[in-house]
Image 1 (cartoon, rainbow over the protein chains, first blue to last red):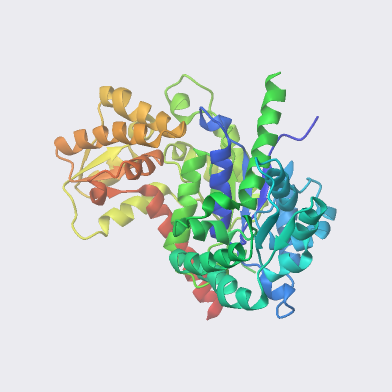
Image 2: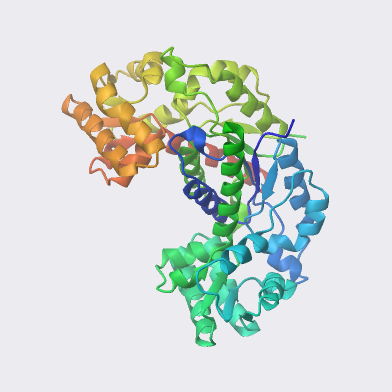
Length: 241
Length: 241
């Protein structure tokens, strides 16, 4: 017998982004009653080593805590796992190796959504942590499609992106949103026609300041939520058949 | 060694109310970084028998599914459990008996908050499911404090409360809010000076329609979240000491 559908969410990175992802799951799922909504178990434990600092070599690795979350979600019966944090995908292969439940990759979900959208862009800006940028996940997959990536400079990261993200983590959404909007506008000034907001704090903050360019952005957490919801809807249809 | 602090949330009743409770946990906790926020594991599985129908004798009991959630949260290491659904507290004693982790009672948290607020009311209206009203939890504890309870009539429940709640569950917040505001106004017209919104759908919906009497209401999910957050903050202080 196949395992019953249960989405495990490895959250806590940060706790607000984890809630934002759960809202996206609800919104992505057509439902006439509670029972139609996707069943999930959410590990929202923010006592986890800072991913940005770990990748910058100035802090401990979050891998032991990430593995603990993966273990708990598997024990709870997760049939699939989603991680609404781009940077945490740095440890994707180790987490996948330790998980019975398949882990949906946030970059796959985002690029699939971007490439099936109406007009294929020539240049895409990527707002992300240094760890995500250095890993090159988005850049490599965009290049394979003939799309150029525009990424923040070191100075921009230090001036806008990093303080913007930490402001969001302190609950200062407007302050974070203003800094992150400056980062976004700099990428567009250098030719980006669309933006991937590849850090889960960014879309939350840009919505808080009602940034005028939101329609040009792709939110990986949104793409991941939509992929999870489609899996659940397919599962329900199979059960009804 | 004491079990590490981990709040288990038995959610899914409904999934939106479970998110609302998680927001309240975040808002109730002063935090300068992700790591200061309360760690939680959330069982948000809405495939659970309808509580209102079960208590009306026209549907199966949700108890087996509630027990499964309690078991999963204990297995995941929950040190405390919260259930952001008033009606589910009908099964509180069976769930407590099956749980190693103590379950915080939503009615205790709400009444403690109401009785420590500035001005003790003479009459309190209770907006709740028939199951919660018949159980009498709020009425009995209010009576013990010399406070009279004003409760919806059967006709009001059928005309306003029940369709209002199910509208929220379908995602129709404005429609639900308008119906539930009529219910609230009827209790105030009969003398209620304050209102306990003892069904987790109600405050969500009344905020969606920006109901003018919100300052006179008590939200049990809010009281429960504040109690959970205080426990976490006390735990953190103990660790720092």
